[in-house]
Image (cartoon, rainbow over all chains, first blue to last red; front, side, top):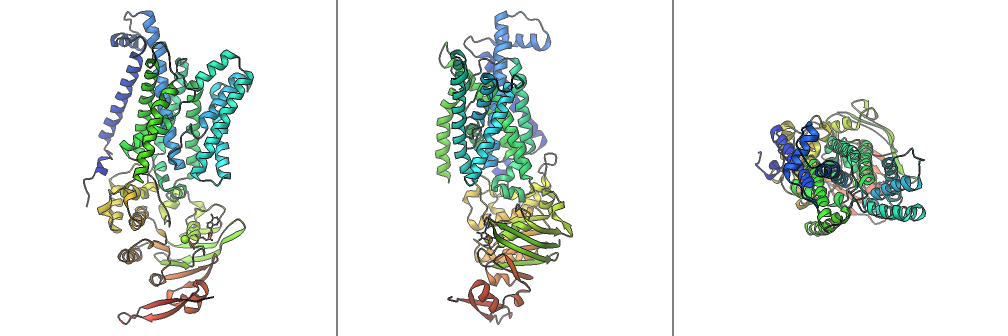
Length: 350
Length: 255
Ligand SMILES: Nc1ncnc2c1ncn2[C@@H]1O[C@H](COP(=O)(O)OP(=O)(O)O)[C@@H](O)[C@H]1O
Ligand SMILES: [Mg+2]
């Protein structure tokens, strides 16, 4: 009765196999991080990188040029780690939103969450909202929650379907982007305005170690929450009512997962600006590899998002010699055509 | 598992859709719900499953009010197959059936060989084992329906709620499904639109305008006067000379 099927091949549930997959994924991530540190305008040799790592991690004292050591440890490594965390966080946000909203277009960028987070961050930095008591990240979090609530309320008023939610998200993004521009025009000086506009497109050049200690925990927290709810996300395949009939506490799952998404998006936006297309494209590409089951989709999407954004960051440093292209520009240049391909493929299938 | 409904009601936009339904269904009984389109059968099934917001009245499973159970406990006891449930996900038939194990699993209690065996058995019962690896969007309406039923069986419920389960099924699978449902040692409540199939149930409830207007053994409930009133059809009863089963032959009444 039991068939040897491709399906079974897709479920390497054995403990050892699972361990191998996780180790392999970790190895891939480490390699990507290493490349992110090595490659740049001044390529640094592997032995220098190894020496700097040893000096910082194990108090070794290999002789290394001060400048090289600074570039590697204070500049490229934090930047690469934040890129990895952002990529993972954005890809996971896409996975969660697509599962809950049951729309292939759902991602934090299109639903206005990123735009709301930018507005919140800008309101704190330029307008001084919160009077210094609010950090940029908290401002971004509040902005993200406000934006998503507004979008959800608008979608509900428009009849409550998933198409309505995406349309409301587009309206919400436009509104919050306009608010951001308005705040910038009203209160920022020319130099601030330039900085903010560059940051809004997604920019990793200012990233230092304190940013790592925000981004990495946010991404790991998001990953753990998603892994905890893989079964619940699977159960949404036939809609929210069907999930409820399968014993899922729909309200609680929605609240926790959307909360995690808002937290991740807000953290990432406050650190590096809003980066589009990662949340949209990565989950679709990964689904082609793993299938739609979240037990595989969630970890692989997190890994793919991390590796993709590290690669995008490397590309942003190399694309125009002597100049850094905003990483959001790189993800859009790759993501937009990628998404077009996905749209066409999906149409053919249905 | 015994199911009791007390004063179940539901309304939307000032319109009463299900009106004060009170009913006891014995453990192991196969209970059919019949009624014209829009009479409230689907809504009543969802109410029994505890899935409607702002519901009034109470459902008890073996004497325990369902409101005291968690969603997960409810799903361990009661499975619902809805009329229209579809997905865009590229699931296989087996993936969809495996969803039935959801209420028994958690992050700390993952899908294991025992669950796999239960799913295999459920697919076998609806005759879909051979298509387990087929993609959902390649399945016919009837095949999807049978997978939904396999999913519900994989929940291992004490109560099975089926909303017009024989829709989309060819005649062979209609009959074998009804036979399967009657042979299961669980309480089954199913909405049916074919009155000849409804004759196979232990008891029938007739819905009209959200109210349960009649309830009892099929032969007593489905009399020509009631059929004329609630389905707006004339009916003649024929008797099969082979096993003296009663059959209806319908004709339209103009009003
Ligand atoms: N969510 C809802 N809001 C408003 N009206 C509804 C809703 N659900 C069902 N109805 C109405 O309730 C009536 C009964 O529907 P339903 O229970 O699906 O009937 P049946 O399954 O017997 O055909 C229909 O007239 C339908 O339009
Ligand atoms: Mg119905």
